[in-house]
Each structure stands twice: as C-alpha cells, then as structure tokens.
Length: 238
Ligand SMILES: Nc1ncnc2c1ncn2[C@@H]1O[C@H](COP(=O)(O)OP(=O)(O)O)[C@@H](O)[C@H]1O
Ligand SMILES: [Mg+2]
Image (cartoon, rainbow, N blue to C red; front, side):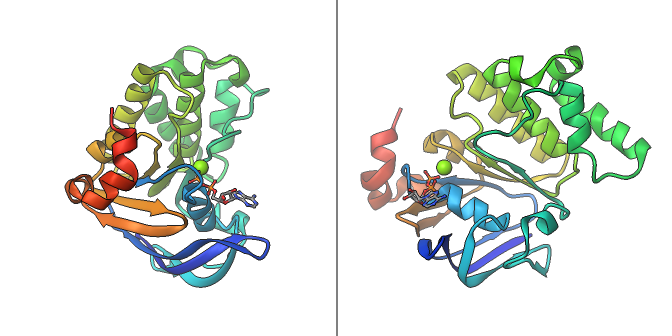
C-alpha cells in the first residue's frame, strides 16, 4: 500500500529523515513511535508532500508520489489527521464533515459515508450544528478523524491524535481506530507518544530515533528488544 525507500527529507536544506525505508501493507495497523523530536511528524509530512525530499522514493498504491505537490496527493485515497489545527474551529460539526467529503462527487455515496462516520462517533450525530471550536478535546479529535474518513481513504495517517487527551478519552479514540481498521477496511499508521499503548494495538511498528529507523518489526519484537527498551521504551513504561 505504501512503500518508503531510502528516504532523506527535511526542511530547507536541513535533512531530518535519514535514509528511512519502510513498508505498509494493506490492512496493517502501524505504530510509528520514537522520542520527541525524532522526526515522526516529519516522516508523515514527507508522505503528504509537505517537506523537501532530497533522496529516496515514496510509492502509494503502486504510484510513485515522490515530490508530488500536497494538493495532488490530497486527491489520493490517503487520509491525514495532522497533530494540530485538524478541524475548522469556526465551522460546525456538520460543515467540517461536509468539507471532508468534497472530493466525493456522488451525493448518495457522501451521505452513506457520513452515516457511517456519525455511527462511529455518535457525538457528531448529536451535535451537528455545534461549532467545532467549542467541542471538548476528545470530541474535536473524533471530528478530525471523521472528517478524514469522509474522503474515503484507504490509508489513514494520524499524528498523535491523543496528545492532549485524558487517558480514558485517548483509549476511546484508539479503540475507534481499531474499529475503523476492521470494519471500514482502512489501513492505519498511528504516530503515538504512548509507545506501549500504540504497540499493543498495532501489528507492526517503526521506531524512529534521530531521524533514523532504529527498529522495525512486530510489536513483540520491538518491546523485547533490549536496546529499544534502554533507549526509549523504558523511560515511557507505564
Ligand atoms: N518546519 C520545520 N523547520 C525546521 N525544522 C523543523 C521543522 N519542523 C520540525 N523541525 C525539526 O525536525 C526535527 C524533528 O521534528 P518532528 O518531526 O516534529 O519530530 P517528532 O514529531 O518526532 O516530535 C526536530 O529537530 C525539529 O526541530
Ligand atoms: Mg510530532
């Protein structure tokens, strides 16, 4: 579904991602973890065309999208929930969802998608006319995910969607992601600060450290790797 090959990317002339290769297969739930500042957001932004790519390639569903403009990538079935500013605060819940679905031309299909999204997040159904800026943190993240789903992505990339949430709300949101993967057949890449939690949900993980792939494999392999525990998981153990 997604293949990153020997990627070197960053901002201006500065390379942040250093020779990362990684593959996401259809149906995967990938946990992308690593310390703060290790390049997780930069890697994700590289996939969306939001960084400078110096070397390497990115292929999505068999199409080489390396150095494509973000607006062109946005037309692919590739959903992205950014870390910040992921809803329009002045627009209502309903309007946010509507905008998420603009690329879906067929009105019936849009309505069908919308029904599925609000079924997944009932809070969105009960308050269609509420301004997004007035939602709680958890509700806002649910709207952000719902908005991304309105474009019917095959791959959904989420950058720390639980960052500002209370643990119980974070847990609810993560459970919805598991459901989205299973019921809507959407492949998931989740950037998450709680590495153990993310690895417990995922079937594959990528650990980034200082812009490099420090480890990739199954969650079991990662959580048993002594270097990774020492470097990273130990300090986050909960
Ligand atoms: N827009 C930017 N311009 C220059 N450097 C940036 C920019 N965004 C992030 N960085 C730098 O890239 C490195 C990785 O950051 P980031 O990808 O946000 O890490 P993470 O998401 O893992 O916390 C950090 O050193 C950060 O300072
Ligand atoms: Mg980040």
